[in-house]
Length: 213
Image (tube, rainbow, N blue to C red):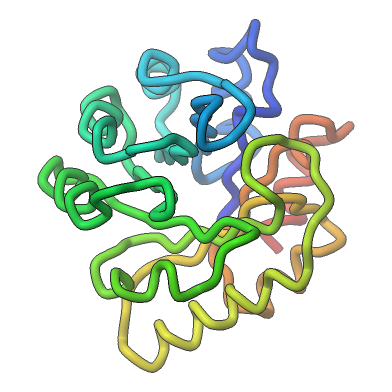
């Protein structure tokens, strides 16, 4: 299991310090929650923060765009240092166009199934993506309670991958902790996003090691 701490739970006054810390703690991916205040009610950060994180980390930068019309911005996030760009198809008017832009930049592309959306929203694009993100909380805020019923979406994604020979990784985002990571892995996930679980831990390195296991 790969671990992607969410910078949404980091100290915004010490982002360089914290992104370096998660690398020392043994994390695999830097997860950046980009929110626009329109698709979701919260506002976080944009391209300059992604660029700053990239400059201070050797880890993969995963930009999760919770924004309207992501096709207008995916190219810029690639240019500013994101290695993986994921977005919500229900927020887009041109899903294929956004995928094509990300691919043209030589970066990896992912689609997100929000907690109130069906698996069918991503089905037409599964052969093209590198990452399938399943939200186990409603997108927009950190620290929410894990929704175990959404693991059905993970299972669907894993089954489709197996049956069709797709190559995408499955990432679970929301409410992940040491107590539920075994369920998540059993459902077929490869990556967990962990914000509060890591940054609020008394021993983040041990927490990441347990999530890995």
